[in-house]
Image 1 (cartoon, rainbow, N blue to C red):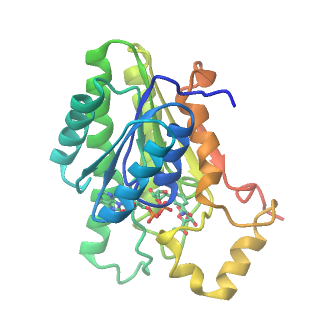
Image 2 (cartoon, protein in one colour):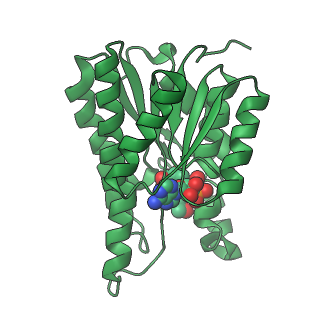
Length: 255
Ligand SMILES: NC(=O)C1=CN([C@@H]2O[C@H](COP(=O)(O)OP(=O)(O)OC[C@H]3O[C@@H](n4cnc5c(N)ncnc54)[C@H](O)[C@@H]3O)[C@@H](O)[C@H]2O)C=CC1
Ligand SMILES: C[C@H](O)[C@@H]1OC(=O)[C@H](O)[C@@H]1O
């Protein structure tokens, strides 16, 4: 297998499980040393690092709540201390506490904004500052969503954060292009992870969601591995400000 990220250092937020973990392991499989941020799941973070190391790469887990702007500075600083530089930053951490619109609790709305959007802003800013300081460019990838493009009845607090991430990558692509830093997003469809375990425990909803996918199944975290590695790699050296749907065709499936 051609390794696409040989010699690179990759950072991923919220990577103790799900899509973030798949991105971290995928990067290691492609020859990168990987630092992961995680919120609370120490066992998940430790086992992700063990998997990275089993692939012959260096791994590092740094705990922190991305909603706190200080977490961003600390994560970048620890990764640089350990690996000497950062080449790729993947903003993945996110929450989606499904709730109806008319009685959305203020705390649920604000927490979702702070984790998904404010957290991403400060993380991307800290990563970009380090890349600018290093002077050899880099790649930033946001895990946005199909929900940046379409709505969800119980996601009125969530979909704006994903549209915001998509927009953030477009604006930072302009702000950072002169530094050789590429900024792109992936837009996953419905991927089976902890974020939607409860929602998709409803068999009827799960079957409906799967039925909307032309490729005939809901996604798995490793479906994001290739698209994220591609955008991180030099194969995508002229790709910036772009977004890549990874949804099995769900978005285009009107009828
Ligand atoms: N599963 C899906 O269908 C889709 C997921 N996404 C996005 O993918 C990203 C990853 O989600 P999944 O892997 O699906 O779910 P997940 O629940 O397995 O992963 C989310 C990760 O973010 C971490 N996290 C949550 N709050 C955090 C905080 N305050 N600080 C640090 N880490 C925090 C969690 O600990 C977890 O590791 C999220 O941004 C989500 O919005 C986007 C489209 C579809
Ligand atoms: C949590 C949802 O199941 C998931 O997240 C998204 O961004 C999409 O709306 C997916 O359906």
